Length: 282
Image (cartoon, one colour):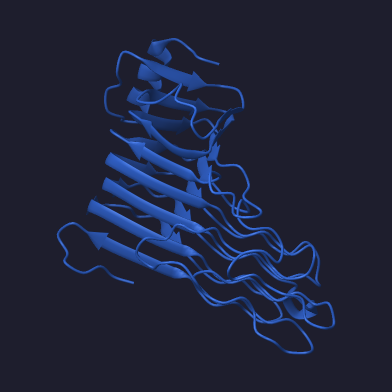
């Protein structure tokens, strides 16, 4: 699992990363770092062509995702407190174009959460809410799940869609990067689409990101999951994204859209603020 330090230095150089310390770990097979596991604290971490699951708060010196790497957290179907991604990075964090931080569908399970989508009397699932409200389902009326959580400091999971097998909501990623966050791949907390036409979609989750410099050309998203479209289930509401930075040269896409369904769900929120501004923008 742990490769020689020269591998870390090589990968860091290729990605234009800052210098790494004398200690570090390269993950090349699927690994879970549990909440309270201090094995890798303060180290330079490289994830290469595998999935690294990290639960709870952790501190790394730097982090590189390369060669189709995935960083995620364990699912939180009932809002399990430790099952979120909360990282403090003393240096830089970089994702190449093939890699992703992906906590999509890691939030509340079907009909769970503060903005849960419920099933109407006919059994059709309404969409879940979070940053935006969920869409209603066909027949019998009734509202989709409501909005909740903070616009400026989002840290809650997306709720699950209506009916017993509605789509789960998106997860939570809280990232504090002292140096540069480079997103050439994807950083997502999307809700899941409904598994069948009768179900509601899950709501997008939370991305709360602070970085010295935000750059890259990838995707940052907390979108709702699609409902049953015209066939019945409501769409999932968009999640919440908050971006704080000293410098922003990111040229990619930031998206917190609500999803299609029998009724399209409400858009989530995107909040941005530089240190030079007294007030941010929604």
